[in-house]
Image (cartoon, rainbow, N blue to C red; front, top):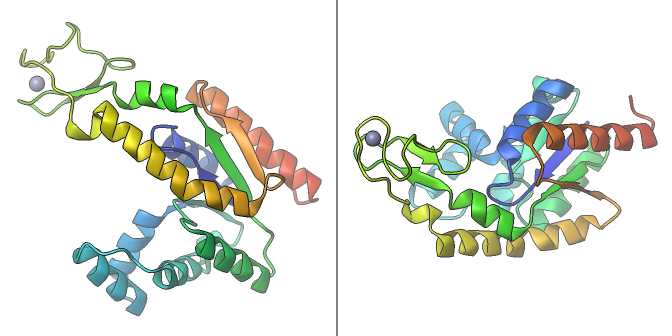
Length: 221
Ligand SMILES: [Zn+2]
């Protein structure tokens, strides 16, 4: 079972990755986690990636592909794995699928959690932070007792720079520009679109159904 999870910022991808990993007993691997692990293990690839990240540069496709290849060769991936944040470019997708073929592994199930921009803007701009105790509230899901005021110390809550609407819209645009070509490359018949606007539980059930459907179609239990 090889799952690739895609979805825009704020779509709840992290929650779904954790759920899927537990449900199917596979590791959920994010590129961030892989880089940290490789850096710590001080492998050749890890050292190269660390040096680039530390200098603020972008890690090349070659290094990212190498790190993914070494990570999925590990024992805990023998029954499958879920990747979150990879592939990030079409060349990475091409290399990844070639690698799966080379190892005799099935093609991945590509899941795209679809949430309209307007809903994401609503979710992503809902965070407020207390400038005193740094506690983070969410006006939709975890509001303070009194609107605009910290429960603990009464300070006026602020919207962080990252959560401003123009910044959020820019992030969503960047995501669409980056991911659109990858989903197009996999093709509409390979990409399973799941409506991500519902509750986390409902989305989890829908994703699970999609995964089971795909694996039944191809005869893998
Ligand atoms: Zn506070």
